[in-house]
Length: 445
Image (tube, rainbow, N blue to C red; front, top):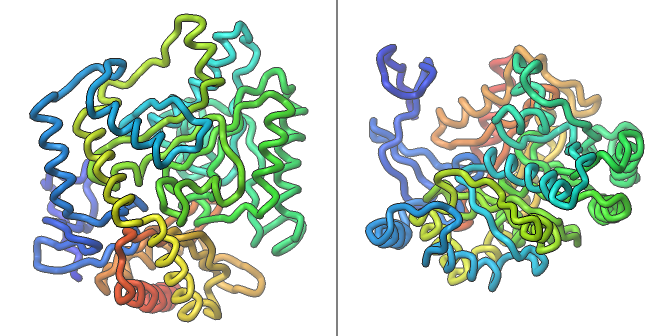
């Protein structure tokens, strides 16, 4: 596939780019370009697509909703909001998460979840708890606040004076554990670091701990270890800290279970989940909370301030239809099955590759860490921009992969295709990724 040079006067993107990918339409896992080319989307966009592109029944549901009711302020009850909440409670959400709040994107939703955690305590008269502890490898959004709670060095750069500085703890990172590669106790040590930080900051000042159950593209599907989350849950309970699970990227079936927290046997107090909620058909992200979290607001006669387009009728209708399709076609189970198939193919093609340090993840969310030397874990120089090279090399061969990392963690490549992905498409993704890595390494040498 050829990437077209961008004209200086082109109206999109916002910041002119030297090359553009001009997409006219899509079907299933394939994007079609203006010049007649095709791109196999191995990343589901930004790890978003789940039921695949071009499903007319979703568009029909949105059209019906928007011709009946184009807009209502978020606190109002509408048929679309009611239907999608009923479906969520019936078939998707953990039983303790009884309350739902809808935002238009992940950054908004994380912001709202953190506000909710602090407001929970203030509604009870406790004004001392305001700190949100997060992790050093994470992405939670690009508002000034969510940049502050995220552990993403590259995206904070240049905004340090504007963003809040919250306490951060180590992310469980088995490959590069402080105790040595694949330290068997890395998960417990990372959990203990959370308790140490809470005690150092003063438990009476900490409102919440915010983290992804499986680290998203910032770390490339970092797996936390079996003991980490149960220990974290215990620590939060002991110190009265609200546990916020950010499942924007890994929720709604992406990892082969309804939500990634199910892999680790814990339930959060607040959960944020979004990309798979409407599968890319509409902008909607849910903030789900327990009665215990929300009750003080209700008792104090307070509300959680909404966003203008939160719970938009068309977006709720899209989400309800996408979830129905996932239920009818058993797509969460398919994500688990095809995810195992993807892992097997990646291992066969790249498991012994001299520049692949690790292949990790669950279901149809997989990450690879690329290094100059897999024995020493020496990275390529930052100037080589290897992940960008791999993405570019993949596009030249007609397959799109998703680059990740934080600047401190770099040369991450992620895969997250739609759950309907075929075996043949998985074959092509793995084969092309090997060629793309080889091309990128050769060009960087």
